[in-house]
Length: 265
Image (cartoon, one colour):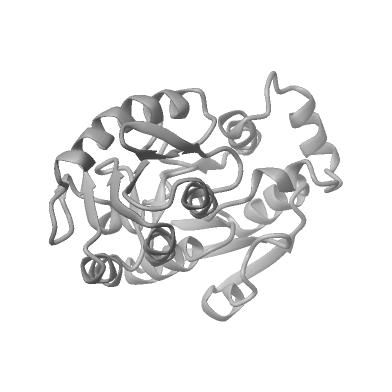
C-alpha cells in the first residue's frame, strides 16, 4: 500500500518519513510552501510543493501517486490560512461551506474533500506510536505538593479550553491561570507566562476530550523544555497515549538536569 503525507512545519514530518521507511512503506509527500522545511526533499521519496490554499493540486497529486491513505504531520499555523493566501476553487468552496473556522472544522473539511476522492486521512502517529507519552512520572523527579495542586487545577481549565478548541496548553502558578494558548503555540504561551510571572510555573498540555489522532495531536520536545527553563517553569503535565514526545530521551535528560518534572496523567 502507498501512503501519503501532508507535511507541516517542525520535526514531525521527518519522524513520519523515518517511521514509514522502517516499516517498509512507500510515502509520497505534499510539502506546504509556507511551512515545510526544505530538507524534506533530502529524505522523502517523492515530494511536491503546494501553496497552503492549493487543495485541488494536493488531491490530484495523491490520486496520481495511487495514494489511498494519508497522514497529516506537522503544524500549519492557523494564521497562515487567514494571511492572504489565495485558495484554489476547491479550497474556497470548502471554506465557504464551513460553519466555523477552528482547527477541527478546517482540517475536517480537508479530510472530507479527500474522502470524496477515495483518500482516507488516518492517524498521524501511525508510523511512530512508540513516541507517544506513557502514563506516569516520566522524569527522575516527581511533582511536589504545589505542582500537584497546579496540575489538578490546570487540568480542569485546560480540558475546558481544549473542548472549546481554543488551545491545548495553559500555564499555572499557585493554582491561578497565568496564560492560555490560542493560536501562538505552546512555546510562545510558556514564554508569555514567564514574562508575566516568572518562577514556579506548571505547564499543562492536554489532548482534546475526544482527540482526533488524525490531526492537531499535542507535541512536546526539547524546545518545550528549553522554553520552560527560560521561563522558570518546573513541571510539565501531559495527556498519556495522546501526546507525542520528540527526542524523548534527550528531552527527559534535559528536564532532569534542570530538576523539571514531566508527568503524564
